[in-house]
Image (cartoon, rainbow over all chains, first blue to last red; front, side, top):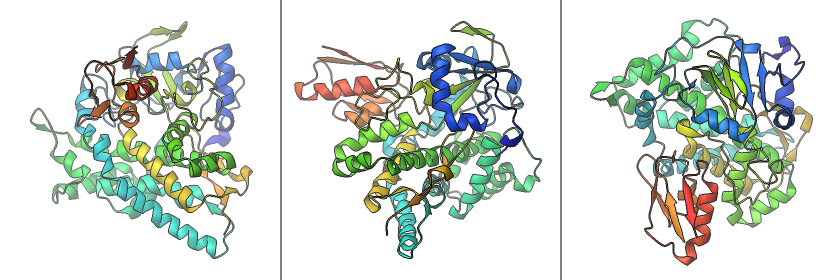
Length: 404
Length: 64
């Protein structure tokens, strides 16, 4: 965490800081205040940044690829140094028309039917983790960290298998993610051997000599109009899958378990009414949407009266869009059987999360298996739950008491 | 009841396919394919409304 030296926020309308611990602690209340008063906040931090809070504005910016570029998607003091149209991690950092090409290469791996083929891997992963937890509970452990012992390992394990990388590298993945997402403003110079670039370059080079049917092999053999993908493209896309595909889903699973730990009624409803589960999954995604995206302003533009200048950031807090009372009835309530739920947890417009079907499957399987194993559990100590700061929001430690 | 699907608005969220597989399939890239031509059978009216009301991109509309 880098927050100790962050300046206090004087005014959330004019000086917001989404990496401040006060934001992590109370983001929904901050969005609600801003939505009524502002509704697009500005900050001089990060070289200039905007924070829209209404569904309408967030949707409009998400779909405006003319005035906004995806070249930068993580807000930092710096500006990205890998130019459009590809960017560092295609397709998330790519703009049209290259974006559609880079995205098209990935889509067939992540379609609902392709993802069905990975469900058994997710389920086996969950069951192995649960078996370990059951042994610990039976041995008298009174506190289980559901983030450290369960939620974080599920997307990391499945992604390792999709990429045919060792599952033991999950710790490395998490370190890379932390460096990029939570320490984005404090890039400590690391030796090349400790960077994600080195890790990926080494593994990709080895894979080129020993191709299989995994996603790295597929990218190594993919082409654009007959030309093999650039090395930076292959590396950037795999970096994206690791960075965007793990702590996001880990956050959604953890936040859902955090919710269930505090709601005996919703636990009971989940267990007794399987028909409610598809709606419950989408409500978890709406209410605890982990991901806030970002864009850079490519050309000066006015959005709802706010003059956005070229080179400034704008955040896209999809979790704020999901709680906008203009877009949702009872927006601030978790309604487990909400049947009308046009949430934007996976973004809007052309950058809809390419892994959304994988994430949704992992969330569903993780909750099915967890609830089958442990119908009854509660927070061991609500004060000791810690949440990530920055653009991916979820519990990073989640101590639960599980009755033996 | 008629159901309309706007392929140009679809971003492949797949909510329709999950909620109403009788009405929507998905292609190899995960974009929706509308399976009905003309009237939606009465027993699928509620599913059609669910698909329309859950599309994040407003790509599905219903004509009653």
